[in-house]
Image (cartoon, rainbow, N blue to C red):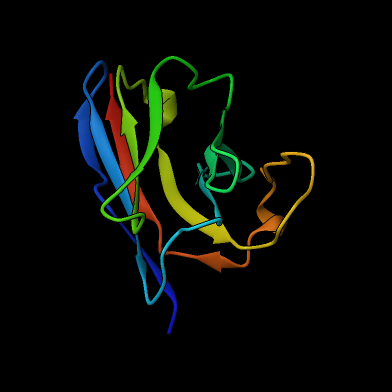
Length: 128
């Protein structure tokens, strides 16, 4: 059975760092699109950072650009999200998602409806 397992959330002070991991179980991320979303209470789910393994394309939302870094490792079975200089507004449940739909023209999906496989969320809380 193919699954995603997210880990690494926690509670930190503003300015500190956390690293989230999204591990593939039963498959590898070869040629998949992988995306970290987050959802804060009362807010819509938003894409934070995405990675397209087929083309090596990355996406960062404006709110995290320059602070977060997405990477793939562990034999292409784990995607990490390194989060530095965390702010209280980064507080949310973070979810990883993956999809193996092939797109032409280097398109990287960033909408939640474009992802079929989801892991359980991990809470990130940043205190001021």
